[in-house]
Image 1 (cartoon, helix red, strand yellow):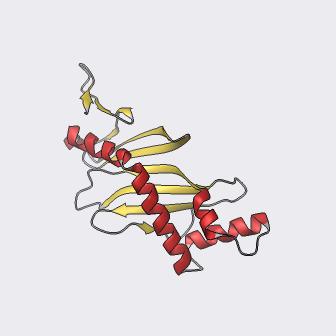
Image 2 (cartoon, helix red, strand yellow):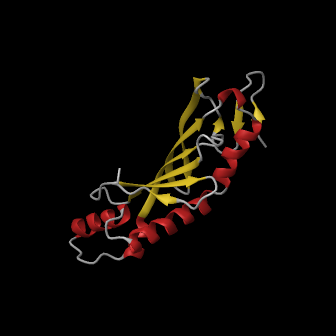
Image 3 (spheres, rainbow, N blue to C red):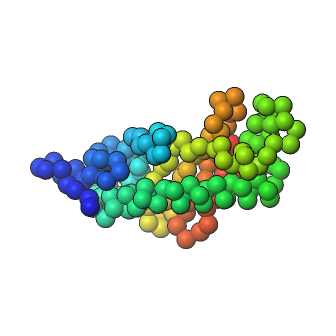
Length: 167
């Protein structure tokens, strides 16, 4: 259950603790981190309508974290599909970098997918019709010698998509 901190009016997430937004009428954000499994993940909360920030918006944020494992599973599925579909996709480029780094001509796509780690998520629970993005997941390969980040976007009403380029 979402709590309002006694006397402060600050709403509290079950996963992130107090939600302290920085910004104003045009939008507000909060940057923090959370540990999922044994890994820290950077978190950015973007609120398009801070004047309407309420317990239901915090509940939406908590639901996103309640379902984090499923979001991660879908992200990996979409990354795998992009990898198989196109040799020029962002996942294919990162797989190629891994192969070059390890000296492997034909790196195993399944091993590659299992070594991707979520490093950042952005949650936008209140975008409405103006902003259909709800969650952005950013993945890195677990070897620092392999550079580049993959981005998966979850938009309201559509299947998640991998950005065409690496970050």
